[in-house]
Image 1 (cartoon, rainbow, N blue to C red):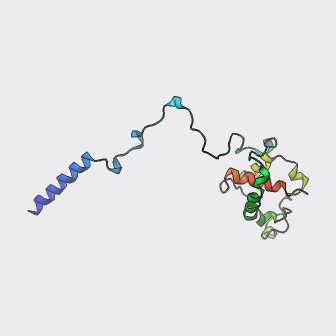
Image 2 (image 1 turned 135 degrees about the vertical axis):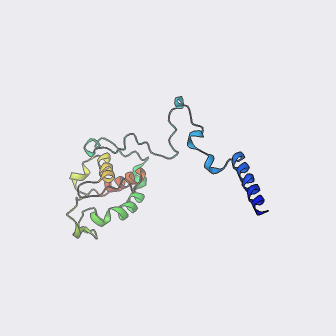
Image 3 (image 1 turned 45 degrees about the horizontal axis):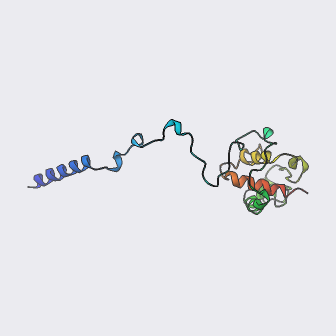
Length: 159
């Protein structure tokens, strides 16, 4: 009797598996895809165009301007992000001498200096994104809009 019940249960399970759409029966190859002539998808709403945002060489980036609409309105966000990511080494004034960990590292650049401020926005963005020999890259931690907001704030540090 028990063998009959087991065989019947196995038969019911086999029929159910054959006739139903179980999750393991779905495959990416079976999904619909747009035709090649459809072209690329439209960018997400609120996104910033990346055709000029790198990763690029900071030597070539001097001519790129901050693409944020009204960069001055993003200064408060840039100030907050600067306080989190930049103050430990560059300090609150950007001079690089009053940061809490500045004494443990080689002297960092003064962000207020004309040597830094003479560069274009794209150069600052590239440095934040890719880092330098003494500065870690933040491209993986900050999205493009956040990096541009920091650039907008660094511009306010100029004397």
